[in-house]
Length: 220
Length: 208
Ligand SMILES: [Zn+2]
Image (cartoon, rainbow over all chains, first blue to last red; front, side, top):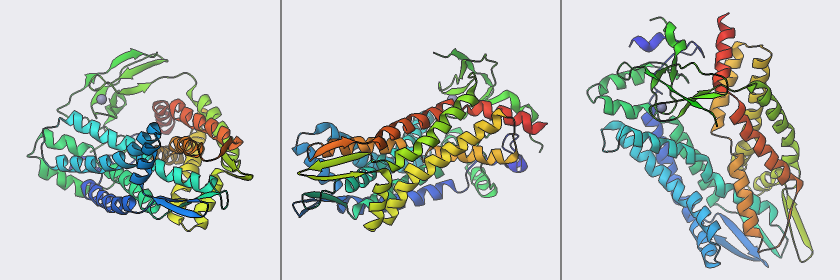
């Protein structure tokens, strides 16, 4: 490839149009996250002692308790942040990886949006880990009532970190390739193995996109 | 192949990767991608001074935000309060080393480095002391962006308050107030630190 030895005039790094082995890294992190998801949901996240009596609850049990007491807003926030979002992120990553290999019914724009949603949601699912950390530190009233962290929190925390790493190692540009043309697939794979660094500012003006004039807007 | 020389007139949309010819805009205006509507770049007035002030304020606020108690509870004569550091220490003491590390990294270590990097970049660009090392800083600043979780921790505090409120009497400490201010500062840094402006300045300085 000609692009191999080019340097970015801004950050002086060697260009590569892609992240190396993007797909296999993403795949590995996603599988790791999926594996963590199981113990994260089976083991309790925290143990709550009232008058010395322990009561452990998993993520879903915790949500059920909130619903029982009619605290719907918290129940919804926790349900979305610690159950729906992690699961959706993993499913979203699998969809992206699947479409990076073959053309799909989803338009490139929709896939790009899916990628940005997965990326954006990343940090928010750490919510439950922080809640447990805060509760365990604050609620410590001796025999009266106290809260302790439990096993599940480690798996949950690792799962969130793994999905974030998966999203970060995914190269969104793989999605454009498939749509542009399926024939060049082999070239893409060659490129994958050749280039070593990733440039934050890929100029690489694609020949088939052309230079359109950017529009100008007044700031509010 | 030599680096393309005409690149200075090209902007790449960060959302849809479209290559566009760079529009000439006035300070205080924004350039928008015609394809996907994403913001390409913006010219602000005095961007570096603002970043300097806000990141310095954020760095100073870290001390009270970490060390002062955030929330306290009391019931039947018993009282307990905890700061952010306490949360981490208690996790460590009960053997949750990985979780303690996660909380430490995402709420203390990375946000501090993130603010420090922003401050260093703003100072260096403002006083025109641009060196190759600034590139390293600026690149790491971008990487750290998605790993700063102050906002998530704050939502965690709110959820915890909601959970505890029925359980015991609740007090809000100075730690929480400092933390909110810190959160505002760190958000403002991301808003004020003008990436486009920094790259332009660096490019000019490194070419000479
Ligand atoms: Zn765009």
